Length: 447
Image 1 (spheres, rainbow, N blue to C red):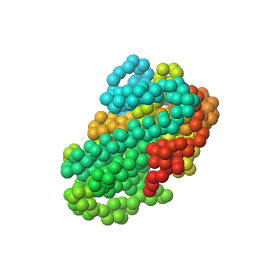
Image 2: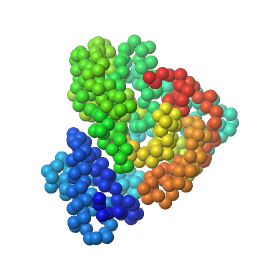
Image 3: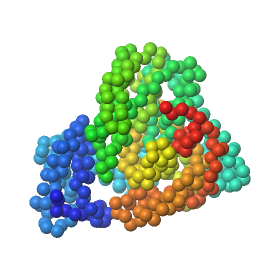
Image 4: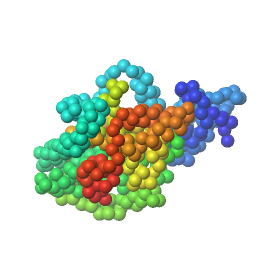
């Protein structure tokens, strides 16, 4: 047992010293370079702690930077050069992201689809939905049904455009990859694009890459020890790439089955073979992550990216954040379909967001098409269901050094929701709306 009880964060706040966080950080770095030996990560953690205890004076409280320096030293001394490099890169990237958050100067980013945003902003201004105040006034004027129709039609046009572009390339295409961060609406969009393509005479077959998860005991974990299903390294990317390559070549493969109840993958289960005119459809967080399809030529892939690109300003002049929309969507979906406490969704979101910024959002620049999945009216629905929760979380996490991120998100979203007209009755939402994926009551089959 370590003699350290606390650690000093970069903010200067003192928090409990947790060796498991060191283990998780080492293991995540190892997974990034193909290693999956948690026992070794735990032994290296013991060495890190022993080194700190031998070099730091009695009663000293280590700073997080000192612990990270020690991790790098121990990794290099134990000949884990690749893991050390991955750890250093992760540390440097985290520092860069912190610097960006702290720097209030506007800078253009390749991660932001400016052309698509301009289209969405132009549409919002044309329909008087570019500010919360304008939206609320339209609702109060009895125009809710009109707002709904306009919003759904805008999304459906994106779906038709995607199907049209796929159809134009049908002679070369073998895979359609539908990607986007958590709760961007991939499942509904995948179904709708499949329906459109069927009307165009294009046959498709879905490949569920969730069956390619590694066994749970090999999964990376987040900083609180929760299993991280949302990093690409949780998937057997090499096997996915191999199976896709063989399927395109006309070979039969046996798809694995992942049993989420016991966290184990069973290989060589379901035979799969596709005809020469069949297109494989993949709905995945990491569909655009290069290693998943690295052996497949670009002309054989159509890459589609989703994000709720709402362009609506609140009264403080700030645009509503897309990540906040997706957080609320995921809270409702997880609570309804996965019996998952919304508070846990909030406290875990920081790590979801970090993974998105590292592995998902940067790949949007490589997409053939970007779809906006936001509905201006959806936030009014979320207000009636989540407003009191965010108020409670803002009060609960205030002053909690370990839950700073949850506090600031709760505070921001609580203030934003306060401005919206609430909508308790959701019967006006179409049965095939993308919003039904999160609030329930969909006419589409998600199984």
